[in-house]
Length: 225
Image 1: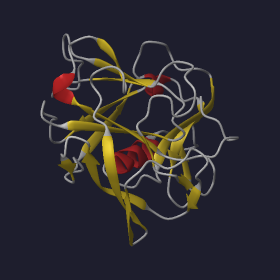
Image 2: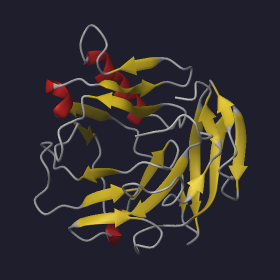
Image 3: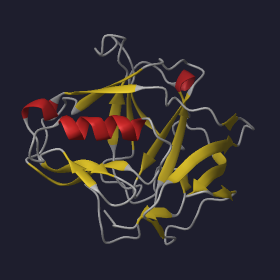
Image 4: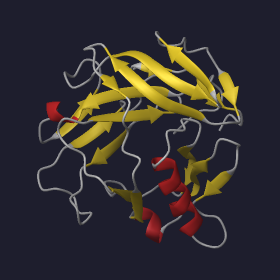
């Protein structure tokens, strides 16, 4: 699903949750549910960085240290600097029964916590929860050359946040190279899909790199994974 041959960078999409109807919807710049980004504030291992324009796709600033997201400015003059990092619990779906190779968490220093590692899935779940509660763009979930493929139309895992999202909140999505699609479904407090809730699709199936993401930070993990 991902490529290692192109320059890798982190791309960002933003969507206001209040703008989405109850259906399967594609989130993107031309869909009426996308909030254009004006600026991005980062902390590059202790050095503040403010970007006022998206970086060129060829930009590839490799790091083996944290690159923390500290703020996002929108074209509508909204500034986002408070993030929902107060707690997250991961429950395996597909991955409880089948642990394919090629799935894991890449940490900033290049350490891989794979789903199918010896000793079971507990380390993967813990690493995923830690990644979800961190602003570090340099640590992320990867799917690379998965074998066997996950079961179609069934969630690989669920995420329960300690604090629920509200319709006035924004959802920030990062994709490593901007060239992969995935879906998110809203859950209730018990972890079950909300009846009639949105299924959000980020990225287009077969879309080219950077085609549906709003901002390229230019940063990449030094391991190129």
